[in-house]
Image (cartoon, rainbow, N blue to C red; front, side):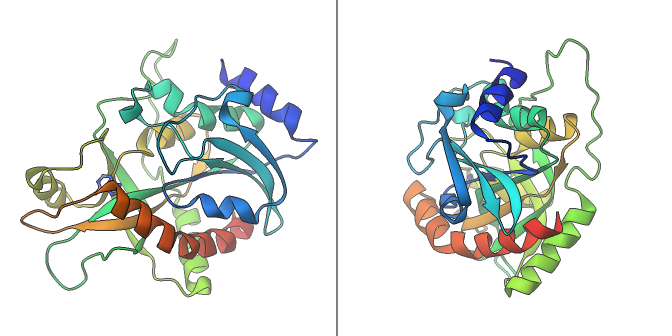
Length: 267
Ligand code: HPA
């Protein structure tokens, strides 16, 4: 289905609501959706969005009000590692843009990259995404009828990042800020890959977000994104498993939710 057709299906369920922001809730962060006032729940398949297969990712869109702001929440997302193509990965972002949403707020679980020194990230830390490195080998703009040479300088909006810092301070939460690298997964990174990522200045590594942000910028949306660092890669190699990612995500999710709630009225 085209983004316009999906947007029409969503609009038909919205009862006149006009969501201003799309929040994509990553691993363990789905809880925020429970706080929506006056929610409408739309399973992905019902509105023509591709369905997710990953445990912990619910696969529905919710519309409602949070802190007085009309939002759409994407609870769960599809990933390249599920064998989905990049157009499916960005379908919700494009549909939200077609609906008139102005701001995209991606969140994800990611692995922090430490140097084995004081100041390293720790599991449970929150990170504001300052920039990204797209290492997926994919780009959602490939194959469009005309080339879209989208500028990605300040893809993560500087004014919204300032608002996010203020929101975190108000929530009493420490907020790191760094570069996120997006890989396809689903294997976690080798120690050699982590050493290289550390060397190029990456602070968090994950398996989502970069394609969605490219599509969002192409559609003219402003972007402010967050990583929840569920595990930390140290020099010499650090074992990682999905359970740990889900557990730490679930524990730290409410802290990120507190920051997001304070950010929304500042968008
Ligand atoms: N690597 C990639 N993706 C992730 C990680 C990681 O260490 N942790 C959570 N998502």
